[in-house]
Image (cartoon, rainbow, N blue to C red; front, side, top):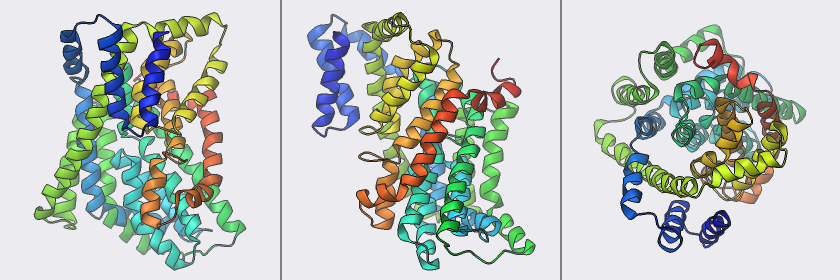
Length: 428
């Protein structure tokens, strides 16, 4: 009964158009003051201890690194390198967009940042080369979602905070599914380009490829700094985030010199704004999780589902449906922080690996970012292309269907996610 009251109140507040973070906070406070005897001191204590986790510090650093890279010309050089590799294939510039999004995802940790960085440069170039606007928008909106699956990923850090799972193991688990999804999106791009005979670029010479690689090497090196550092144990994911922010600053300001020192305060302020917004959501979600646990809601749900004889296959299908529906009205950070603490205990009781469950949730978030009404990537792409959300929804459907098929593979083939972290000895 309490669960019904909490969720009815939460969704009623969200339907008024109130931001999710404030809806969460008001739901918690209303429930606390009217229906429980929980002392306020313990709530205040939970607020501090809930966000006192070392992993949360990674979020502002990854945001800062992504902002330096977005403003610092790294994306432009990555696109040039990707175009030199695959530009001569059918739909070459579109394929280059997929490759560039995958590369940029490996340094930014954010999907909207990937769409902005790659889309703002590549989409005008695609239209100029003779591609339909819709084709380019479809490629970039969906490929930009790789930003939260290919590590480092801010959403994975959120999942780790919500479930006390290893961030390093999650990062490694995202590598193979991330590359596989990039391959799936690339295939859809190539197939449609060949079907409609979209333009191809002249084949780059070996010298041109080497030149493009040399120019983008400083940006690509960040992938090795972050992933290599975590894998070898030189530093933790949080320390890797701090390293990536410092490295991105040096590359943008002193190596590529696409930014002056006078531009740095603006980037710092933008990053602080975004970090504050995410940390506010986390704080309220921590309180929400506290209320749920205090009322024994996750445990009761787990017992009820097991009592219904729900096995892992049916449970994972139900989770996918719930998360895809949630993706219609919420953004990824909120979904993970609200649903992970509720669904995670059930998954563990059913013997589902926590790392595999995390990757499955992240792929669900990716699909949610590419469909209306709250698809973040669609809104970002809309700003770049000046296309309406309805037109963009039509544009992305071939790639979106492929992503849904891929979600089914990730859900029921855990080895895809777990092979790499197991091989590296990060999980048993």
